[in-house]
Length: 455
Image (tube, rainbow, N blue to C red; front, side, top):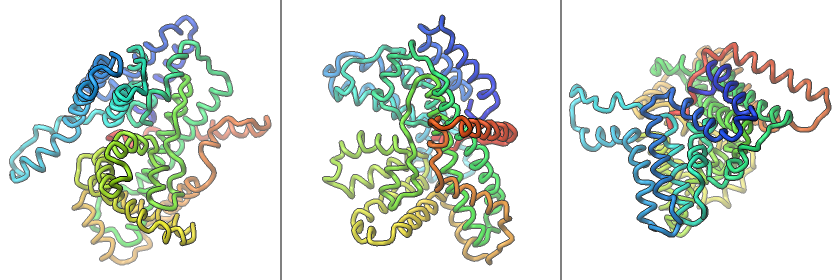
């Protein structure tokens, strides 16, 4: 199940909110949300749900004893099985094809892993489980939570399949007080504001751009220079609003049940350099990599080596393919390069820094859209074919212009927030949200799965 489905918006979510709001069921709230979350995830496959449940039970059971008991061995025992499951579903087929069966002919019919479907968001909940186990090992969580609290922390459906990647301390208070939580009208309006804005940018912007892009990439060889420029910009904004939209919806859904999720986006396309971009884009992943990989590797003591290692991991985290590895390494190289020339770079006008960073990030996103062969074909066609202005229709450029205006315009969080204002302004806001939601429902049947679900 996904957030941009009629079944979720009109059946699942209202039912869960209603049950959550019944006073007599307050003592059962943790179990209610766990059951709802497993049902939500079960639509992706009950085998995948079993993997999630087994991972949670295993980590809880291994690290339930005092933090000092077992040390590193216990930590390894806790996190190795979830990472093995991640490796099996996401990477084993890639590794075998690249390093074991690479010499086999294409017609050999090897399809052992063709029917192994990647569980949605497995990278997200695996990293979250690892963070919990490591924090227990470090003593940052001195008292283990009750099993229902840990299970809900990992499986909570608003963040289960695409983040944010939460730390236990960020939700500990909400879990402790969940049975007494009562949302008021202002809080509900704020939560619904995030959900509506997130759905709006996902369905009306990201999915619109996706439809236009598909018209070009179905026949890459015919694309011209203007078409190539359009695809680069449109895909950059599609990916941005696809993931940003999900993150906004997640914040709103979490707020309905008393959870305050951290921002995962801090206007990343306004970054002045590639390092700043990674402090603004997918913030919770960047912090996870910093705290659980970069710093244990030695941090700045071996800066260049560690930056390349962590960005190779970031690339692999996004997908099992050499295009993802190269994408991550290129980001690492540009981060390291900026570290060397940061004083000279900062001397340029800020607008030039921002534009250059945005264009660099946008070009590198093409490694998400194409594999190497497709990217080579795209590049050859783009530079060898003539300038064909008619290849991109005016409504396609309008969609990119609207996306850019919203991306670099007012903060969507401020629009979603239920801030104190006059009754008239609140009325206009509510009418606007109702109109956006009505339009979203009209176009919901053409909406697509969130891109980050595959990670």
